[in-house]
Amino acid sequence: MKRRTFTTATASLTAAMLPAPMAVARPRVGMRDVRELEAAFGQLVAADNSHGGTIKLETRALAFAQHALERQTVGSATDRVRSHLYRLAAAFTGTALWAAVDDRRLDRAQRHLERALTLAGLSGNEDVKLRLWSHASLLATQRPGGASEASAAAQVARSSPACRRDPLYASLAAARLAGVHSQSGEERIALRTLDQARAAFDRADLDLPRPAWIAFFDEAELHGLSGLITTEVGRHSEAEAQFHRALARLRPQYRRNRTYYTVHLALAQIRQGAVDQACATALTVLPDRDGDSLTGRTDRLFARFDRIVETKRRPTSAAEWTERYTERVGRRT
Image (cartoon, rainbow, N blue to C red; front, side, top):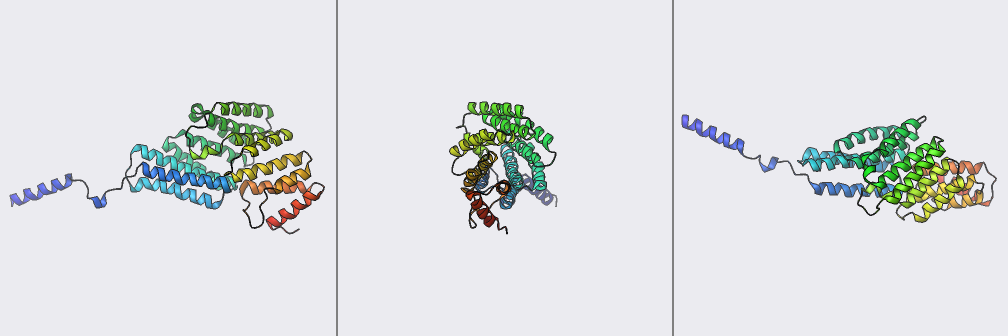
């Protein structure tokens, strides 16, 4: 009896010291998973560059964010891999945030922002934090009375360690802050901050590897942002020149931005009294009935341009604009 008890106890102790059976072992999560998620993130960024913010993009981004988090719960991972997964979850949620901002779903955007900032904090990644605070600034500008919050968020982005490390980040953050100042009527400080953005851009090494989300920020985009800022302070002739420079340099894959800046060019022209020229410009990017849908900021820009045209005398190009735009949006006249 004693021998049997000893043998049983020894077997139990030995079994306890053995590794868990392979059938219940947690799968290993590694850099391969991270690279797959990085590729998916790049595809979402490309979709946004082409079509703009949509509910489909927002939904897909949130699904990928959840997937990045679930990888940590179903498998074991090193601290380095976990940090990457949190960063990617924050990045995907940031894309959902941007899609909601672009389509003016502000309450949803605010929820995405809060979640993304939490995930970014867990990741410890300063680049994604900068992106999120930049989006937070743009979100605040869309709310009535949000100027102070927009300025504070833009200042947080500009003070990011990422900006101290990389002049390209510093340039983008300064350009965003200049935009906030211009919308608040602070012309002098807006133009001074814009000059700082240009100086930082000139110092940047554009060939360095960076996250997919900042690939849009090149010389064309800086000219485009400069056009928006000079528009806000009433310098429409200068804005027109900046938009021309932006469009001349814009890469083909940035279809949404080409439409966006072309309509801004038309707005700059019509504000200078060039109604014919402005309508001709806007017509070059107005989709036909069966073409691309109008979404987000671009849709609102076309509507704003149309309202201005309605206040003008109707030359031939204006009549053509009204006819085609009315047909495009399905509006009865």
